[in-house]
Image (cartoon, rainbow, N blue to C red; front, top):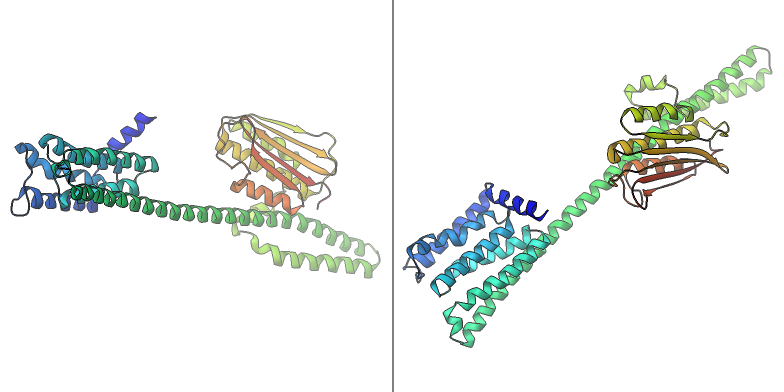
Length: 391
């Protein structure tokens, strides 16, 4: 695993760096040339020709990768400084060194991971100790030179802390945006599930009210008490009009075919299980033989819960085996769906996935309860209780 990460760092170093970072590296190299190489702007460094000529590249070129590979860039800058110090037995001093080390220490904290930032700080401590060890001014033992070295060390550590603060603020902003996005998606999922439930209940109640209206009209035509049956018929028609006015707007334009399709219930669970088996997930279905006649809305809720739970298994846990149990527990219909999958990413321990939120919303409509979460060893389970008498 570590070898893979090191390989990724090498790949990032080989990528073309951003133009801003190239510009920063170029500014640092020009500063090094002016201060160190050109006698008109400072004292030239001692050493072989290759070191003097390559010093600007050795010191500043890694800054071009300060954001794409911050740890490697900072360590290379420190390596360049220490190489010059050890080779010439005299540390280079000046604005060019302050610029290179300052940018490197800031970048490793601002753009690297927390582990990279701490590693960079440790590398800076070692590198700066080597740098001061070869500094002839510090070797004189003069307190002013030692205080000067300590002062610059404080500057570099401050740059590192500033980078760490920027990194923390950036992470906090990204976390807030991610949290807001998740909340928006969850709200959209709940709203979508509510709209779906409204459409389904619209179908069920519309059918029942239509039957009432037709029966009342037929009875009145057959000679039953006209005034009583007329009131029933009128009430049924008014209820249909009001319900369609309130809930009909939730239908999509392409839902015409869905209007003609009977809503599924417990009897259709075997067909649902068979379709999931055909998709590659073995499903064991256990239905209580003693189930009494249930309201269509309750059966529909049980079907949708099983459908959503098995869909989650297909999406997030396959290959896995699933078990579905539907039975009567007291005065409630119990629905259990469990799997032995090893991928728990579809929901957190308390069951906060979007599909879970939709199932919870559906169960709450009937005053029931839903629990969802990972099993102790492997797998995921959903348990719902819906009052059997809910309409």
